[in-house]
Length: 130
Image (cartoon, rainbow, N blue to C red):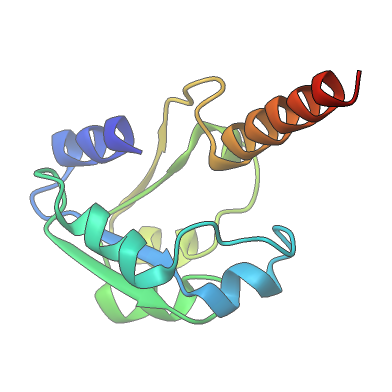
């Protein structure tokens, strides 16, 4: 995420980051054990980054109401969203803004990290049983 926020800083004067609430993460079906880190800690860590000006925790399943309230000039999404419908893009573009796609860093998602940890735990458990 750090490089994502640096990308945003290079394209915007003010960087506002929306963070899904714990409840919205659970509703989005990320898994029983998600979120790994609670919303307040996630927001605090993100707010501590130099490239972030404001952090807003939102409880909706999408950030649409947040985007409508802020009306940003730039909406940034991960490159994996390119070619797909981006929530709030119409709001931003209607206001004269643009949607930018942040280059994706392979293997850097929380899901990948959790999968690697689970895999390491399974390997360790199998070794102990042998």
